[in-house]
Image (cartoon, rainbow, N blue to C red):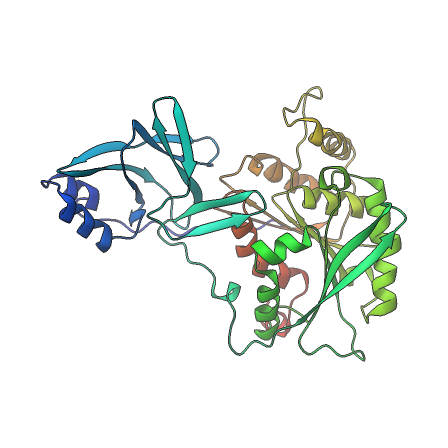
Length: 395
């Protein structure tokens, strides 16, 4: 059954916003410097978030990636006596939102975009970095940072020649801190493995969740693609590699439980498509799926999807699956951010998956298509897929 996401209400802000109090004053260098020293930027007051920039320009704007909202939000200029102007704009964001953005400045025809120099919160990804606005009620989970009493697991490299993919695959294998060869462990295979380790702090998350007894001691294979846009969108050799090459190699070398219900495929975006399509191609092998912001693009009429050639095999796969849904996995944990364009296809697929008899947990967040969004959902998903003793007691 899908899970209804509960959001907190934004705290009410009483009185004038700080920026309006500032505007009422005669602005000089000292007044503006004191204001910036006394406030974190963006200035969050209830649901109102005020973005600031200081500097000469012909135009300044905030650029964010919230779907269905104007993503180019011009700032207003405040002249400062004898000093650089201050630019501002106030945007309303629901409680617990986390929004990535950049500042855009224009000088004549020249336009430059960069991270907010007044905001220390920055998120990273394989394609660059962005500033982060943390709205009221958002808190970085404490289990994504190292905990002093959590014993670290071991991460070892595993290179595996693949006839299916015609290349050597590069994987990293996580062994829990109390790993014993005489025990047997569930197996989790993570697509875009190095990105999950680098941008979603997943090694630290595993250490903490296992230490806190939220997650069963689990062997995790962080797999990495070669040509991601070829291997991940429903590619038969990739599914064959996972099931007939990687899985037997892991079972030969490590004490994993040899049952489908003790195996899980996981991924985000195209990695979620790769997980879904690989499980669909090898029924009865992978009984658990953890899918984050899946690129589950489909069409209701014709084949024009607007996503470019990379999405052609995805749309073909999803359209065919929607015509004849069948149970791919016994249990599916699906997450998506409400601020990303993929929210519609992800919401749409939940009842389709449920109609096949799969047990589906679906969680939305006020976030975008980003690694920190996927990081923040790891505890819910991993502890549901392979619950630790703590979860088994209280579920």
